Amino acid sequence: MKKSLFMIMLLAASVACADEQVSIGANAPAFSLVNAVDGKTVAFQPADGNLKVVVFTCNQCPYAKAFEPRIIEIAKRFEARGVRFYAVNPNDDARFDIETLANMKARATEKEYPFPYLKDGDSATARAYGARVTPHVFVVDGTGVVRYRGYVDDSAKPEDRKTTGLTDALNSLLTGRDVANNDTRAFGCTIKWKS
Amino acid sequence: MRKCARFAAIFLSGLCVAGNLFAADLRPVKEPAKIAAVFPRAAQLRLVNVWALWCAPCVAEMPDLRAIDETFGAEVAMAGISLDDMLPDASPKPVASFLDKHKIAFPNVYYTGNPDALGDYLKFDGEIPITIVYDGAGKELWRHQGRINRDQTIAQLRSLLRRKR
Image (cartoon, each protein chain N blue to C red):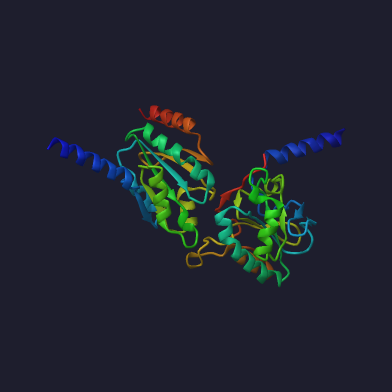
């Protein structure tokens, strides 16, 4: 009974805090989501010993699509150094057909995503991370702690780029340094929440 | 003679309709600090709306913003800030066409600067649309993240104006 009450309180607290971004230094939420590419469930274990990037993205947002080649390029570069990437689509596919598993698979295949493209069907993972927009990036270290959150770069235009938030964070963490600019402002399209 | 004058009037009005002579006020701005210059100085309240064509709720609320602009006179000055230039290969042309189509009379900024600098300037987290109301001296009075509700925003502005009187 006490355990049930505790679980209810924990659930209520997590719902109440759903809009808050997971803090830098906090433990990242675990998740298990279906990969649209092969239909298999991918379990994200925060403390698996690997440096990881969770990118909330989608099929419909022009700003997310503008960053897509850049995310693929960064993923290819850093996966060779042991960093694992997870693209998570939290948009409501009941309201937006473009966000269904089939359309996600089509996009991931066409663009040759080098990472799983996971369906966050009830938007619960995005809520747990406090993601607000697409694209919104979180970097989790091998112990499961969030070390960076925010944008990929400060501009989708290479010529206007002044800071490369995600790349800088990964380079710092891979060389054992703290991330200097660990909390940046993610611009993008509002997540189309599953209600 | 009278016949000629009537013909000329009909011809000219036809030209206006066919040519859509409404032209949006869209100004390129690179420095966030220069955005304030688009407002008429005399206004009691200044409303800023940050939007982009790639943002679905932003596009959806544009008729509401027009209605709000038409509800108030010079006491509420409005300005939009388009973030369309954030996308590669962007151009102001579709933004101007969209504003023309919706007959948006208030000025709009086509922001070409760094997005982060604008976020710092307006103190917002990057999620659009966002609507912020300032008093004539630039003090923030109200802000709304996400799509606005037309009636609630009008009521809010009326309430703020009453407090100013």
